[in-house]
Length: 102
Image 1 (cartoon, rainbow, N blue to C red):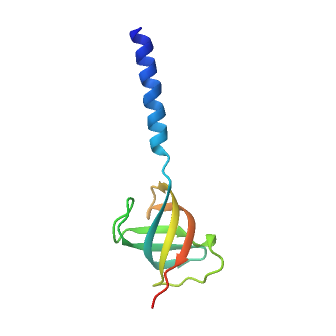
Image 2: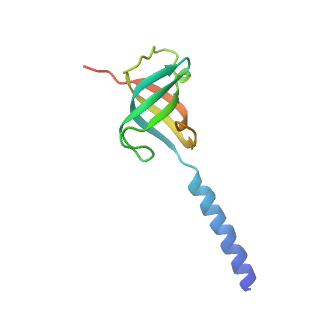
Image 3: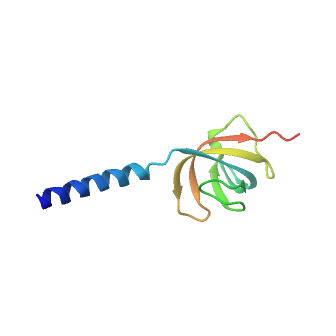
């Protein structure tokens, strides 16, 4: 009986661990500091759950072919919660939108 409880506990713990790893979609606000063909380095300008202000993140610009981005542009980036440990950190970009300035 103890062995059965131990196995059941291990299975439940594994399920909870796997469920906790799947992060949903997130967004960040940043300013483009460098552009390399279809990607850009973006400096975070507003804290979120994953990044603090000043963090540089690699962003895929090819998800938005309708906008011509430039250095200094402020953008909102939608991404999946997976963050690849590289230098700079790389994200799975879902969307990039230019923040309109007045």
